[in-house]
Image (cartoon, rainbow, N blue to C red):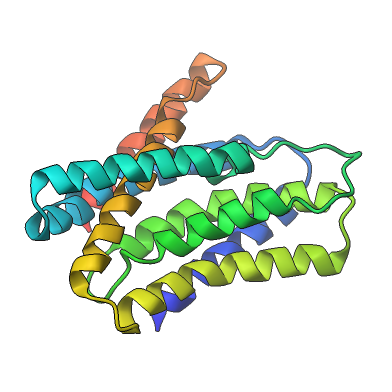
Amino acid sequence: MNLYLLPILAIVVGVIIALLIKKQKNIGTKLLLSFSGAFLLSLTFFELLPEVYEHLDGRTTGLLIMCGILLQIILEFFSQGAEHGHVHHNEETTKFPWLLFISLCIHSFLEGFPIHEHNHMVYGVLIHKIPIAALIRAFLFQSKFSTLQITAFLVLFAAMTPLGTFISNHAEIHSHDITMINAIVIGIFLHISTTILFESTEGHKFNFSKLISIILGAGIAYLI
């Protein structure tokens, strides 16, 4: 049951964080984003990548990973990078951001596929979604959208990852096909996490803090 509840809990925690920091630019959210990028990238290398290579040949795996990277680039063309913390706010906007919503839902749906019993990818997705949810919630509440629209956005967004997990674990899909989807998701994770880690930051103090966050994220992922 935790496989389905933890990604939803991540959205709830992210919303609470956004409520606490309100409109202020909070360095804690940026550091959490860096930690989540390192944590997700490390789990991808330590757990998901070896699992996929065990069931697919190297050439096919490489092709599917590249497809995942390209898919994420296409999704970010519509979401403008919200998957790794780039949410652009426009106070004059009253039109609901359907492209952002659909892109985020596709991304969240796919990242649910590698989550199954006895693996730790659920924690990688959990940590990844918390800062993203906080930034998305801040964007939505600063825009001129109705409470119903905002609630529907967050509820459906929260449901996508558990839906992907449920389908991968219970639907009548051949395990080979699930592995191929997982390889695509590796490409998505690689693109998102490396974008987070290699983004430039301002101030040497924050750079050092970001370095510590990255080391902690990688270290904890290895230990679990």
